[in-house]
Length: 223
Image 1 (spheres, rainbow, N blue to C red):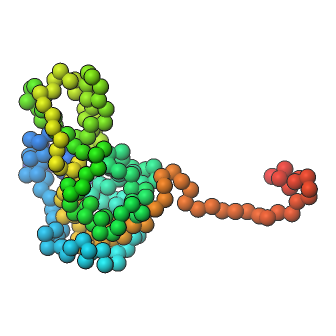
Image 2 (cartoon, rainbow, N blue to C red):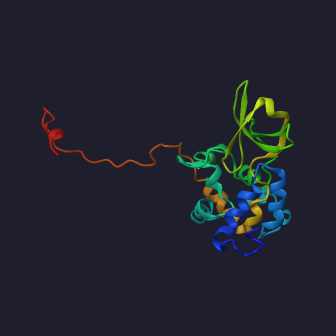
Image 3 (cartoon, helix red, strand yellow):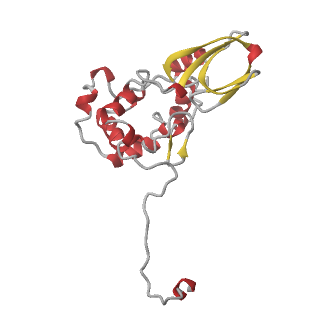
């Protein structure tokens, strides 16, 4: 492979690894975990409980930068905030009022714990032996469209499908926190708690006036 032969540019390694580890094909995911192992910053198992983490005060500004720019987290590849971002996971524009800090930590650390119906993954095996996982975003009598964790849609004809079943795994990876330090994780949640504005709404208004005007409102006609 390009990586094993050191042909892959250094600035593409993180994104390439993330994309391959999120492949809908199990065999590719397994190979990617070997070729692009997660470079853990912390042992998640040693973290305090969500209740204890929620007592910590993080920096929303630093958290925003992590959510927007961290290549391994890639939050905005899957989630939309104020109309910007992906359409795979839930819109995060109002996540700050939909759950407590404890819930936010749980959703990052154990995404498989509670999965909303519309984000349940399906595992589909074709008659050719290909196994894929993803969200069913469209289904007719003739075909089903499966969306993977990278946002790619695959159309499968019903006649090609051998079997399909619900997956107990969230489409959100369960190792994301491993890419962070404990402080960074707290910063990310601090930022998420500030998201309380509906998507595509106006955050603030600026008002001019009042202006002097006669009863005919002639002032309104002035540039």
